[in-house]
Amino acid sequence: MHILYQAALRWEMVERNPVDLVRQSSKRLKRPRVPTPAEFKALLAQLKEPYRTMVITVACLGLRVSELVALQWGDLDSGSLTVKVLRGFVRG
Image (cartoon, rainbow, N blue to C red; front, side, top):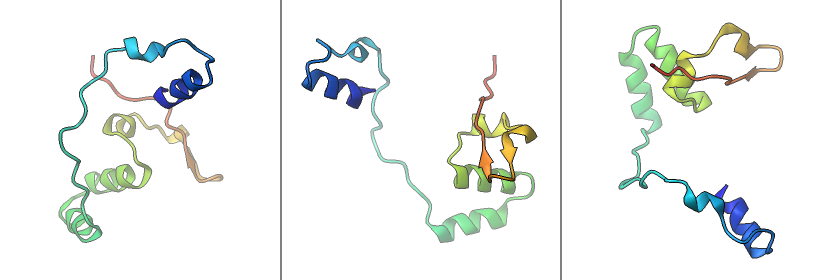
């Protein structure tokens, strides 16, 4: 949204960016460490089912854990090889 409104400001389509009023979380202090393929393979070797499948699914699809645990069989379409991420699990 920030980039969209920056362009709208440049083209004088809006007078100000309304997103500036939204309270934003602080930026990351350090970059997250991404495991190497060898480290990922070693991690999978240590995991038992169903956790191994869960980690592979999260890594391959880029899901959040809350999205993974909310998946249902109807969200998987084997014909078109797609996964619909429609919901997330939130406690409370």
